[in-house]
Length: 99
Image: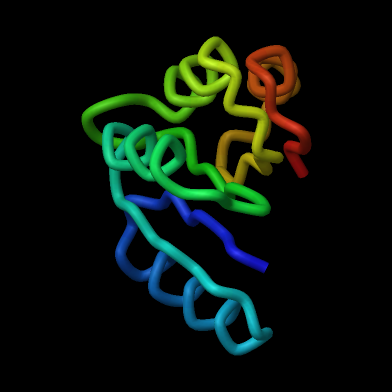
């Protein structure tokens, strides 16, 4: 499976990338919202793991942009924001899951 990991924290990103690769996945890791927009436009991903608190462009803004441009790759939001209002906003923006 080819995954796009969008995470600005280097420790979290490196650990997630290593773990996912160990499980046999191909992982492209980008560290800000603008890189995420470009990567999703240029690549064919099976799923995107998307953080919300990103530099250069917030994760929800990235997700809304993808959906408005017809990019329908499944998106799982991975973030420390766990309030019900955050979950509702993420799902309303087009996320497929917000565990």
